[in-house]
Amino acid sequence: MDREEKAGDPIVGALQPAYLPWIGFFDQVYHTDVFILYDDLAYSRKTWRNRNRIKGPHGAQWLTVPVCFRPGQKINEVRIDPGSDWRSRHIRRIEHCYRRAPYFSRYWDDLLALYRREWERLSDLNVALIRSLLGAFGIRTSLLLSSEIGLERDFQASNPPDSVSTRRIVHFLKRLGARRFLEGEAGREYIRDGLLMEAGLEVRYQSYRHRPYPQRFGGFVPYLSAIDLLFNCGPQSLPVLVNPSPFEAGPAPADPQEGADPGGVPGAGAGTAARKP
View 1 (spheres, rainbow, N blue to C red):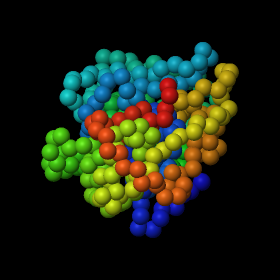
View 2 (cartoon, one colour):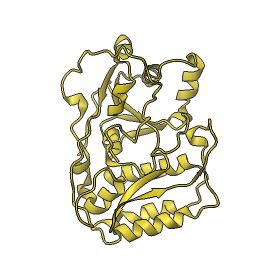
View 3 (spheres, rainbow, N blue to C red):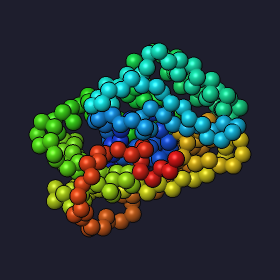
């Protein structure tokens, strides 16, 4: 299921790196040509940055990476609690829940190798897991880290502190030489479409529809980590995961939002906004 880039007109997406993201995250990556993991924004507690859910005999259960967090820290500055044995717990829970899933043995060794590494920073762990899962799903989108290419640094240097978050999108699209942006559904709440239109840019919003797929342990539970789909469906995962592209649905409506910007940033939600944990 390969997608083709429109010559000279790439689609860009951006989200904060999450822990073992849900499948809607990977659908958003799939429909872009360049995807930014925005890892140098402010870290928020009680989000999907350090936790997600898997399915076991008693239903959905949490996997949480304990962190040492100070207010004001950026995502890529947050450290994993060195006194916690979280890796052993997560390995045991994943193996307990999925060792008899049809494709567990096909993919687990690669993920297990990542869990056996020592991780100091949460963002490094998340990015490594995301890259591994992208490879497992066969998604070949170009992945960029905002901290490595200085997107947020340059935005802060060239804009006043109270700039609306939509200007951040204008900034990085122009920096990357792109004009099309794919945003999660929650972006409708804070993106000012009019600012993008004035800059000659186009935004479309993901409206993700979660398809059911075979799972163990009873009835279907949606909105889990993507490893649930991978271990249960293996090479057939991508057709289940991918929704139609918002950029194939005809021209975007001209409906600029004139309301106040609530200060959101690209990818501020749970991977994408449509998620309902």
